[in-house]
Structures are given as C-alpha cells and as structure tokens.
Image (cartoon, rainbow, N blue to C red; front, side, top):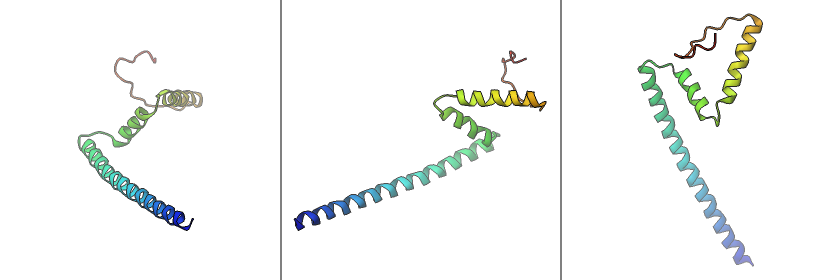
Length: 99
C-alpha cells in the first residue's frame, strides 16, 4: 500500500511539472503575441489610423453578433435626442436613410 502512495506521488509530481511547463510555454507565447500586437498597432498608427477606433472595431467583430453594439448605439442616439445633446456622427457613404 505504501508503494502505491509513492507511485501516485511521483505521478502527481510529474503531472504538476507538466502543467507548470505548459503554463510557462503558453505565457511565453502570450508575451510574444502581445509584442506582435503592439508592433501591428504601431504600423496601423503610422499609416494614419485611429488605434482606439480600430480596437473598438475589432472588439465588435469578435463578438458573436454586433446586435449588442447596434442596440447600444441606438440607445445612445435615443438618449442624446431626448436630452437635446448634439452628436456629430460620421455616416458611412450610401447610408442616407437616417434622415
């Protein structure tokens, strides 16, 4: 019975080491990806793009659906209208039906 306990401990220790190794590798990959993302944002910024807007666009695109974003925008427009707050929004070309 003592033999089984030692074998289980060795297996548990090896398993723990494997998890720690995998976590370390994943964290290293994440650091590399963060660096790549920072470089990409730098490229986009030097090309004249607004990084905050680009970040928001990507966040919207990553959602399962843009419905929540659309609902938020509709609510914002409604609240702005109700409070008399003027919003200067740039409308995409060809979307003149919002008059």
